[in-house]
Length: 296
Image (tube, rainbow, N blue to C red; front, side):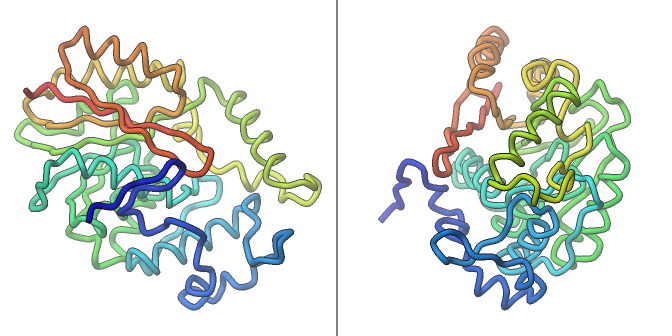
């Protein structure tokens, strides 16, 4: 019987549905125990405004569900929420029409955390090329890959040397990919990103004085913002994708701002691409993946 996704739930194949099994996570990473606290209902949780706690939670999740024993990120880099990242992987897996062997995926902007290649390779045995414009991000992701045997033959890291290019300089002439994926920078400026972070910290902690100031602001500028923000980045990606129609089956990207969907779809129609919008939800949060292809 096919699993049916209910509104507000993660993808049926996502192992992170429901509450975190903190007992299991602490068993696999005892260090996490020191960061547990009680919520108003007397249940164990962690302080999601404390970056140290969130990093340890990620380490425990990656060890428990993806057999990753060595994972860390430098201070100030984006610490991704794993359940939502896993959802992206499970949704785009449906675009493959059942293909399971020798799947090749390009992750644009993998960051210092290498999270999509980790989840995709361990969940579906996909092979990844992961790119980024930041040498420090590539260096740390390479460290993660090299220190975990189950990643070494599954993930290749590439530095994008031209900040104005996305696929060019990464996809080689004879390469073929079943999927590309991307979590584009959302904000149009560093100031916008910092304002959003202050709102996030305020929402996470009723007593803002108790929050470790600045620690929750994970993410370098390339991860969080770019000139023109998400919409301009997506337009650039779509226009550049036309050059790789014979080498890529499905291009995909997260679209955080729903107002950006209509203009990007309009551009895709103009370029003759077929497109799908995959809606994802986690509680009250709604996000979407835009997928497009130039193949019939």
